Image (cartoon, rainbow over all chains, first blue to last red; front, side, top):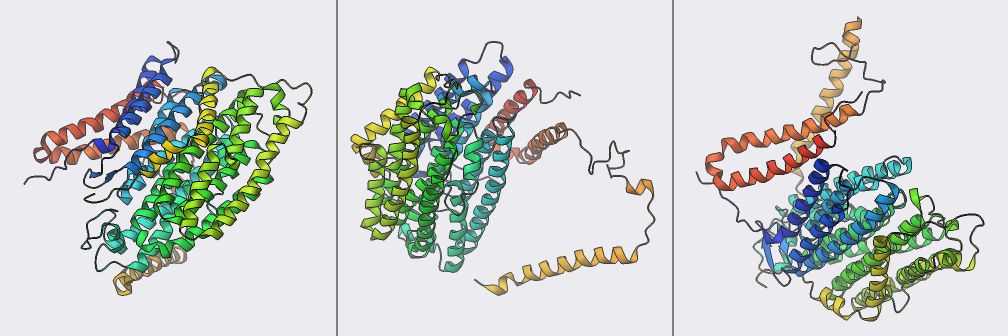
Amino acid sequence: MEMDIPRIELAGIAPEIALTVAALVILVVHAVLGNRFSTWYLPYLATLGLVVAGALAVIVWDVNDLQLSGMIALDNFATFVKVSLAVFGLLTVWLGRDYLTRDRLEESEFYALVLFAVAGMMLMAAAADLIVMFLALETFSIALYVLVAFKRRSTEAQESAMKYFLLGAFSSAFFLFGIALAYGAVGTTNLYSTGPEADSLFRFASAGPSTDLDLLVLAMGLIIVGLGFKIAAVPFHAWTPDAYQGAPSPVTGFMAAGSKIAGFAALIRVLDAILFPLRWDWRPLVIGIAVLTMIVGSVLAVVQEDVKRMLAYSSIAHAGFVLVGVVAANDRGVSGSLFYLATYGLTVVGSFAVVSILAGPGEHRTRLTDYRGAFYQRPLLAGALTLFLLALAGVPVTSGFVAKLVVFGAAIESGYWWLVVIGVLASAIAAFFYLRVLVVMYMQEPIEGVEPAPSGGWLANGVVAITAATTIVFGLAWGPLIDAAEHARFFVAGG
Amino acid sequence: MNTPDYLPILFLLVLSTLFAVGSMLAASKLSPRRWTSAKLQSYESGMVPEKDVAGDRFPVKFYLVAMLFIIFDIETAFLYPWAVAYDELGLFGLAEMGVFIAILLAAYAYVWKRGGLEWVE
């Protein structure tokens, strides 16, 4: 008897392979050498892995294919997300290097876990099968649970990691149950399975004459719940403030940027590409979640006294703004959401980089009162944070403004102008708490007798400089990135 | 949704619940209770128990050892079916298994060198 050996196609998962190899090399080399030769080479290895992964993702731009027995979609949508993730990973590794040496934490595990997480997130963006999507979700979630608890001596970090882990496991169960029901309804877990219907978009939604639509809608609801946890949408956001506060700041920035774009990539592929024919069924649900997310995120952020918690609620609100683009379910909605996630990711990594430096050794200074007069002590950092907060608020000349513009524009194109009105109102509320931080930094005197936090190393400052530059560049010259996002099309059979 | 197809599952659910609750109830009502110290000990596959685990603190190191055991146990669980089907899988199977074992070896080297296998009292 001959076994049916699958065709070996590694182009689809080459970036993930590169990251996994790099992570294993980091773990083994550091374990074998120990700390005898210091650890200067570790960030270089991590950087090399991420750069190679990003390059391997870019070279398949404009390839339109399904690989590994239809498990992996090789399309520009996945490529766009993968490259963004490689950039977020790089910034996290560089910022992490400074943070870890300052707080004397283990290094090799941090880089390896970040690389594993990026590999999982990349796989999530390219998953063409619900089971692969689940595998990817678990890969990056488990790495993130450990990263959240990375300050392992801190009870606060342990608490937040435990909360994140329990709710994350809970959400995985929802997601898995959704997959099971989808299989029951359609008879396959593959999103691009070839059913009797010729029209590619209708395949999964009507894979066979026996497709059970009621069951499929139920499955869709559960999948939305599962992914809703990962993108921190209300009412699945309860873990976010605690996990964001307890995690090391570089990890928090990475979660806000990477976890969000990976979760959204899966959500957008499932809803806007595969289940597009069922949009009248999922739109009311997603609209409800979007409205709640924008309002709850913005309103609760106003009363926060801790800057990390405030940014956590702000990240919830931003998930709501991206959901507006998902609801639009048109080409501009998809490209707008991608543009939003990429630029928001850069901005939020930058803001947590500043928070990480200003918090000082042990990360004790994250309360709003600790930022009193920060401008007079650390003018450059305070200036960068000002820029990031203005971008998060959506002020013109920053990337945040352009991002909101394209996403809201897409929603208006689909006739959801009232959703945009709610979005603009939520942004107005959100602007209040961003401005509150600015008032504290510029208009209050520093507390007497308290030394300012030591300045960050050149890597952390470099991350702040890079993200500040991108925040302005994409606010003034958004063309190339929007073009790339518009070319980030989904896989089309025979296309 | 086609209800009759799922009806056997419902029956099974009801039956298994009845059986579980019923046998617990029967055991508690019918059986005589004569406790001896040997009967109250925790069961460790026939060995003399080290410690009364319930309610007592024990080192978290056991957890690490258990986790490591499971990981390498799964490795053998994968090796057997591969060895049985080796003829049919050929070079492809060999390469796949090589990758799998290489990843596990990396994990093994990591655990070993980082002191995960040492039992420090």
